[in-house]
Length: 84
Image (tube, rainbow, N blue to C red; front, side):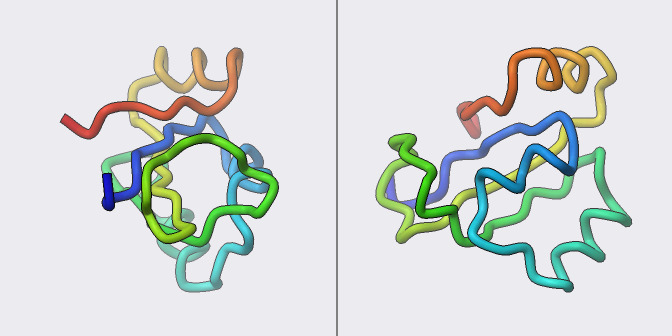
């Protein structure tokens, strides 16, 4: 429970409510590799009250590559998922 739980998002705009800030280096990676296999660990927003384990105030974000997954996430919002 000390590793951040992956949270899947369907768009760049979705992460605004999940994170405290997105460093410029992370923005560059997002532009280059999302959607895709890149997962980013960033500080979670103070307003995020999900139980994501004991990850020291961080959240792991990823935008999947599959179009059906992206459409689902855009419809229902971000999802915390298993990393296995």
